[in-house]
Amino acid sequence: MNDKDLKKIMDAWAEHEVESAPEMRPTADMVRMVQARQKRKFSFLVFSRRVIIGAAVANLVVVAILYAVLFRPSTPSDVPPSQQIASVGQREGFAERGVVIQEPGTPPDKGRGKGPVPLEQLAFHFQKQDSRIHSLDLQALPEETITLSTSDNYRLLLEPAQDCYLYVFQWTSSHTLVKLFPNETYSPVQNPLRRGQTLYLPSDPNWFYLGETEGQERLYVIASAQSLQDLENLYAQYDQVDDAAQEQETLSNLLSRLENIAQSAGWVFEFDHQ
Image (cartoon, rainbow, N blue to C red; front, side, top):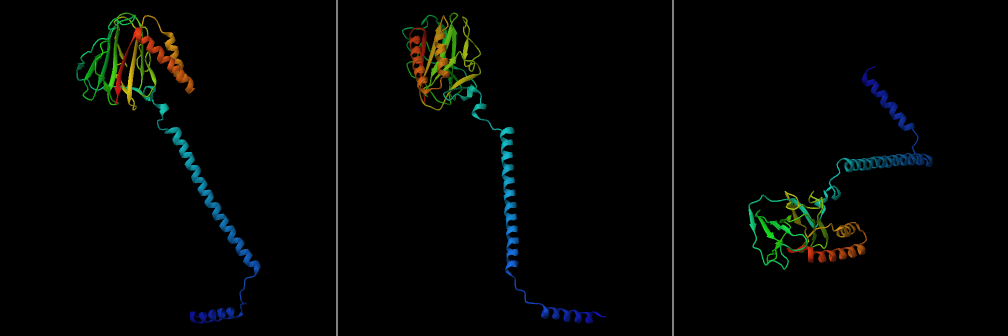
């Protein structure tokens, strides 16, 4: 049989099947079966998408946890305590370009021999952008008020004329009191100081610098032949108290005590922060 004859036979068979086949009309059961199958297919697709999205979210959570544990960025708690202080910080000084001695003013009523323990040196040094060190003798205060900014540096130079206990506090423009000495954050030296012992505060090569709050700054320098344990205890209480009302009461008592001691055994130096 050749291809032409085979084609004629296949065409005749197909024509016979079409004419003899019944008309296809879907019944209600057939429609429900088709709809059920489509619904199952749609549900499977939705479920698959939810599984994929859930897996993606879980992966993101795992990545975030691993990043937090392994690659945790620095937080304030990671910063050394000396850099956390908002009102008084310390940093290395500028490259020095000589010393400028400020002209002293009129010595106060109680000068170099003020208080029970005199000091051979009590100088306030500061650096501006010119990098030169300006030196003020705090036992003969200048008449003009010194003005410093956040970009300037400052420090104290102290030398007792005899063995003594030294205390240095700073009342800041942000209305906080900071104990500068004795304080291991700023100097490893501890009380008592010996006669002729030179103390740079903070320890070289560091200098103090001011925070962002502008206003008036005040330094209290106290030299005593005896340890002032009550002053130490008051400051420790102020530094550790959590209650705001109690903190203010403690601070008021501490400032009052500092003012009283400074009248007979200390020096007070004020400068502007702008």
